[in-house]
Image 1: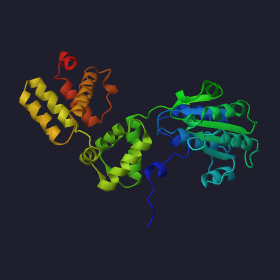
Image 2: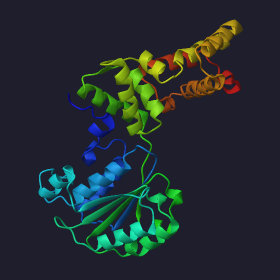
Image 3: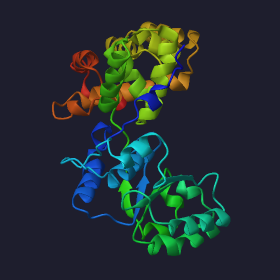
Image 4: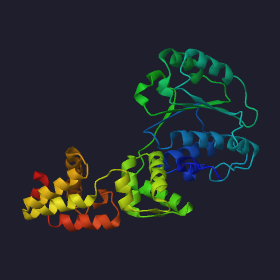
Length: 331
């Protein structure tokens, strides 16, 4: 029986063109490689699951590629690319600063940096979670980071840029990664579902995208969790039950009841929500977001700010037409 590989690993981007939602950064890195305008130190920072370490690995592989394509993508055929893909490259080194955060670890790294590369022009050092280094380790790293050998390039990655000392920041080119848009996450999940032979409702994938909070890795993990439960068919109903998400229909019913002055309907809807095990604060928070979305739909110029599927967007447009602006502001 073939071992299962989680989607976050199986569909991890292997080239710049496959990276989701970070076009500005990937284009800049490709341009730097193409024009041979490489800095000696880079800092990739941003939220979890948005592609920092993935981009660092792709960047490192592409820098040493011997047969670089016209679009500045690695060829995946030369010895440097093949050794990287099979995890036997001696030119690309990864260090986890969370577990190697002492002065001795950095001193060992400083000694290793002096060794020239075997294949290609550069030795690349990827240091993940670099904010976990101790103050003394940072200080030991400063001189090497400022004046490394000509063959050395450092790529630092972190989720907490504010914890890195200014003297390190000033020695790096800094790239701030964005949270990935729900639309981009949904498109990627559709691609994965299609490849895996899974039928998935767009509304279901949209809920997963919202729950992931801008992290594609989290979205893929949630997707795997849902598929484990549902099999080859993923529905909106299964997703909201599995993730304990409140159905948007309750918000539409609550607003309709409020507009018509039907207090009994609103109370019964709220009681039904409580009986399903949802917290009252959770409902109020969701209702606030719902009213905000109705306000967004009031003006044609702001409808684009609504992150929803076309079918749900029509429901919002239909309800907002019945809502006076005063009602939305007061509630």
